Length: 374
Ligand SMILES: Cc1cc2nc3c(=O)[nH]c(=O)nc-3n(C[C@H](O)[C@H](O)[C@H](O)COP(=O)(O)O)c2cc1C
Ligand code: SF4
Ligand code: SF4
Image (tube, rainbow, N blue to C red; front, side):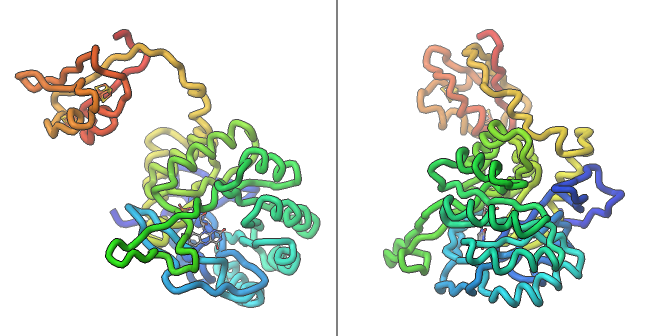
């Protein structure tokens, strides 16, 4: 399905974030998808609720050749630095142009107080709705945050690094120091891929490494968002890291995110991904009677801790089964088989109740009902 931009009154779900009504819950993360005004405008026109610009620093970055590679299904490794535009270009041209075009702009600023103090007030004057601070080390964010809070009245978001040794503690310290929202999370790494014909790393940086984003990091981000939501129940969170489908966005919200951040998928598929995702999220919300994402935010927490009831019943839907044998193959314990009429059989003496057979069935033919009597 190609994406179509939903007009305001066509939308089932209403999105408000940090006091702004947004055209959708999808926020484009700082990346090549937001490398300058033109890119930001394309994302906005595709229906992005807000767009975080490529990180502004007092120096323009110089990137090595080969700094972005597809490293798996919908997964990237990159060793791209911050923006390759000079700070002044953002302040006098790119950001004013994006704001004038109606983009809800969030300015990403890194990576030290020496950088942020040079630009945050001007970014506020230009009309960005928030500043997102990002750094390579936890201890450089706090001085940046404290200084930026003194300089601007607009909300200040801190982007968390999943590589932090104490992510929860750091998140708490940022909130105590005045962070109005958190972005969870940045890329994971370092990561490396090797060309097996040459033995060379695929990344062109000196250490051959880069940062992992996209599908591969999605479950990790879901867990981080749920953990953050447990310790910080009221802090607005932009979920970011691994979304490659509209369902992923819903999952982020159920983990506890307020907004659905996307970078790699918007790079790989272009801005149409945003339009497609918005349309499908909105349709799902309409079907489920959801008017505000808040209604389902953090739903997973109602189910944590997961009940440790070991009783279960294996369900089998004969009509749905295609007899592909995948469930039999994936059972390392040889507990699964089919009887002579093609009905699934589980040898309960061998079965370890791991659940893998159910999740590898691509046809929805298997189910496990937790808590049911064996
Ligand atoms: C090529 C590339 C460049 C990026 N550059 C930045 C950046 O300049 N600043 C920043 O805060 N995050 C940057 N990111 C990280 C993204 O904002 C995001 O946190 C990360 O990609 C995880 O989201 P995703 O899985 O949806 O891509 C970059 C990501 C990619 C793929
Ligand atoms: S994986 Fe699903 S469809 Fe395939 S044989 Fe098993 S139950 Fe049937
Ligand atoms: S739950 Fe695990 S052990 Fe039991 S049949 Fe399925 S794959 Fe085999």
